[in-house]
Amino acid sequence: MKNGAISKVISIAIAGILIALVILGIYLTYSMSGHTSSTTTNTKASDNISLGGFSIDALTSNVSGTVLVNSRSTLVQMDLYINGTLMGSLNYTGMMTSANYSMMYSASPKSMPIMSTMLMVAGRSYMVTMIALFTDGTMCNASSIVVAEEMMTTGNMMSSSSQNMMSSTGMMSSSNMMSSSSNNMMTTTQMMNTTSNMMGH
Image (tube, rainbow, N blue to C red; front, side, top):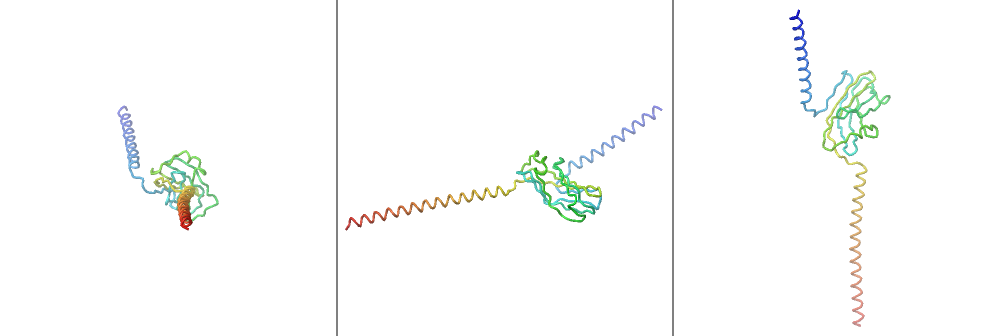
């Protein structure tokens, strides 16, 4: 009886060690792989999404890009994750159809306040993950590595244009002053010539 009990314990221990090794192998394979391309996972072949042209503005924390949708049911909701943290959700109930289409996606701290707590650093890479929910109950996700950039906003462009205009105005003003000084010099010379002529007579 004792030998049987010992052999059962040994068998269970070996099985546990094997399971642990398999889990460790899967984890190491995932962690060591380069996450440089967009990946897609879906529960049904009929519903899937993929990401294209996503960008992160380091100045405003805005996230935008194109989501390609291929589904037989309508899109209900899209969740945004950055580096595994849920930023928020956008509701699409009644807005989409069941078909193949591309949609522009945009999220900001205004629409998702949690985004304001994540400091985006220019030049740093972030994992952007979208999880889509469809009316048939299926979910699928797509991820992409995105490098944050400092993008030129409309306000910055207007400010830059204003500064350029002020600079040009300043240059024109200096030119006018030089022209005015030159005119004054000419007037003084004319006065001297007139005085000389009067004395000569």
